[in-house]
Structures are given as C-alpha cells and as structure tokens.
Image 1 (cartoon, helix red, strand yellow):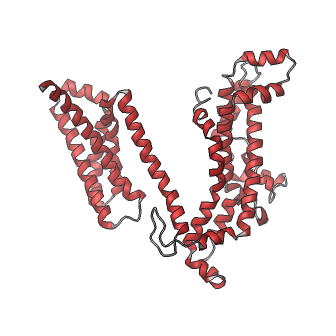
Image 2: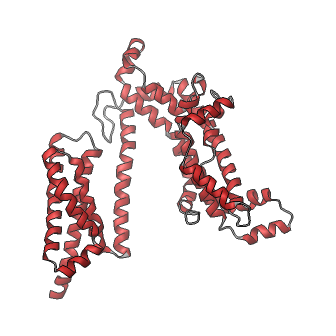
Length: 399
C-alpha cells in the first residue's frame, strides 16, 4: 500500500502541473475569445491566471534549485522549455502585472512541453488529444451558434448562444434581396467552373510529374515550388488580366486561381503511390495517357481528388481578392463575398433615409447574410466528408 502511494504521488503532481498549465492558459484565453464577459469576471480570470502562472514558475525554480549540478544539467537537456519559461517569466510576469498586459500570460504555455513529458504513452496522449479536439470544436462552433442566434433575435439584444425575442425580419429581408441571390448564383458558377478547371489542370500537371522517367522533371518541380513561394505581386497580375481583356468579366474571377501549387504537390505525391502495373495493363489494351489518367488514376485517387476539390471549392467560394482587383465596373457579376462587403460598407445614416427599419436590424441582417452565405458549403460537406477523412494526409509524405 505504501509503495502504491509513493508511485501515485508523482503521478498526481504531474497531473496537477499539467492542469495548472492548461487552466492558466484558459484564464487568459477565455476573456480574449468571449469579449462580452463582464469586467469583474475578466479580472477574476486574469487574477487566477497570474496566480497559477506564479505557482508554476515557483515550482520550476524550486525543482531546479533542489537538484544536484549534474542532475540539473541532464534535466535541462530534456526540459529546455522549462528554462525558457523561467527566464521569460522573470521578464513578462512583472511587466504584465505592472502594465496590465494580460496578453503576456501566454508565456505559461512554454511550460506545456515539460508538463506533457511525463505522460509519454499512447493512452494518455490519446486522451489529451481528444480533450484538446473537443475544446477546439467548442471554440470554433461558438461563433456559428452566435450567428444563428443573432439572425433570429430582435434588435438591441445581447445575444450569445440562444436567440432572444425571436424576430424573423432579418431572415425575410435577406430572402427577398434579389441582388444577394444574383451574387450567390455568380459565386456558384465561379466555384463550380473554377473547381472543375482547377482539379483537371492540376491533375494533368501532377500526373506526368509523378513519373521519374519524365524529362526535366526536377526543373519543372523547382519552377512550381518557386512560383508557390515567391509571387510577382498584385501589379503584374492586374496588368496581365488587363492585357488579356479579362477585366470585368466572370473569367477574371476564375483564371487567376486555377493552379494552386500546394494541392498540385499533394496530387503528385498520391499519384506516385498508384501501382505501375495498373497503367501497364491499360497500355497493353491500347489505352492512351488521357484514358489512363481519367479512367484509372483519378478513380483510384478519389479520396485525394475529392479532398483537393473540396478545399479548392472553399477557396473559390471565399475569394474576394479577385473581385476587388479585377471587377471595377460590372457590378452584376459581383460574387457573394463582394456583395456582402459592399452591404457592410454602406453608411447607416444614408440607409435610414430610405429604410429606417433596416437600421434597427442592421446587426441582425449582417448575421443573416453571413448565415445564408455558408449554407451552400454546408450542403456540399456531407457528400465529401467520407473522402476528407481518408484523403487529408494522403500524398503529404512525398514531394
């Protein structure tokens, strides 16, 4: 029994240390994420964070002071983050307390690697990862519930997760806005055509680059990597689109984003894993390179192709830069992000002269626009989820 207690005490101390690190970081994270917290609550969280921060620093300093010289040297080789944490605390903690700079509280996370080291086994690691994933889901899903709640609430309400005094005015306003649905149609066309062209062109480039026998393969890969890392900037792109007479056309929303080199490299890495025997048997039956690519390689690479297509679709759907740069006069082809941006930039006082009711519901209508703008993506996601699970990490090993 005494031996179990002796073995259980260090484990309890390790768990307490890890909990203190996570709680200290949470005390500074929660006020930063939830801006509507009352001031006394924010002060209480910051005070708790500072106390835990000081306790962690004192615990690390005491442990280092009690060690013998050789043991301390060996310990610091494995726990360099603890030394950095102590040094940063000496500077940041007094500065944060004196100047009220709560953002420096993130220094406590420097203690996290050392606090996780005693839990170096698969079961504990999985539990920690699962807890972290649940916390991240909660943090990321909170804004979505807030958008829905504000859209359904009456104006001048402090809304967090649930609607207050349900009012459907903002929803009706968006549903009767013909300009909004015209822009949504433009975004759907741009996203569908752009995703199809992008996936096809990147697959046709990645397939030959995946073959070791291709001439100048390394030189072409170097070219793609340089283009991915270094760009000419906005001015050359604008001059090019103007020279091609594509400004103020729907093609200016598609062509500049067709080839995304990162996804091309992912496709290339996956194509390299496709068995060569499949292609050789197809060639014996008289299949051309195009037939092999579209009827054999792409179906085999369906998880990766679907993953690349989904992320490409998201980039097209959210792309506002092309509209800002290349659409200067033809407002009829504004995509959805540009339409929402123009609505948000309207002067409320000018709106009040024509529609006083809209000014009262201004924040609610903004949230309704955001809510309806993500509906198409939400409808597509369930059909691609089964591929996303298996395809995100595929092709990432080889380059």
